[in-house]
Amino acid sequence: MRKLNEKQIVLASHNKGKLKEIGHLLKPFGISVISASDLGLDEPEETENTYAGNARIKAHFAAKASGKPALSDDSGFSVEILDGAPGVYSADWAETSNGRNFSMAMSKIWDKIQHAEKPCKAKFCCTLCLAWPDGHDELFEGSINGEIAWPPRGNNGFGYDPMFIAEGMHQTFGEMLPTDKHLISHRADAFKKLIKTFEKE
Image 1: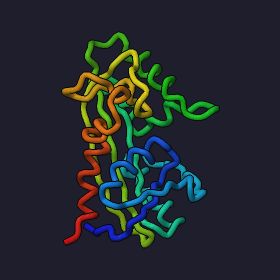
Image 2: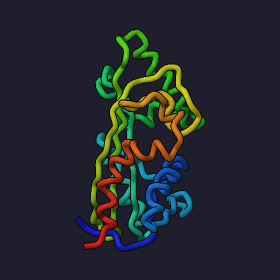
Image 3: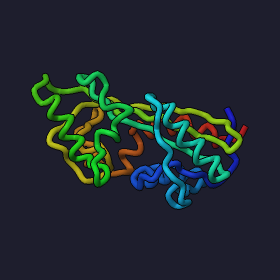
């Protein structure tokens, strides 16, 4: 595994929620994060059908364009009874002509499962890709299991957080304090593996 020696990386995302969460996770390691949007970078088209494939597209694009190591996050929300959908297409389910509308996307899920036996199992998955300008990369995967909550609850978090309750919890991700969510989330699970690249031999 290649070690990360730089103290600043590019987050290959224009998602402000991800920037805030990932910046919080990296701060204890003395690593600052600058977003792709801050650098004026475009968003590459995500043409793969796996989290790893799309994470690689975004990280390598940002690393090459910026000349710095770049970290991408491809994550999704999977509902068991929907055979894992929306999964890697989670953002697509929220797309409208005026941008992403996750309230609409959550309603779309509920419309499909409202008559199913409860509780409905679900999970968040995350793949992080850390890429260097020379083309090398490292992948880190994480996930967290739970169930669907309806109606959605909470204004914290982002995306599908208000309709997900993690195993052993009573609050949705949308209700939890960000500091508490960051300890158990799918992203935190992947980060536990990523931080090994910060550790020196």
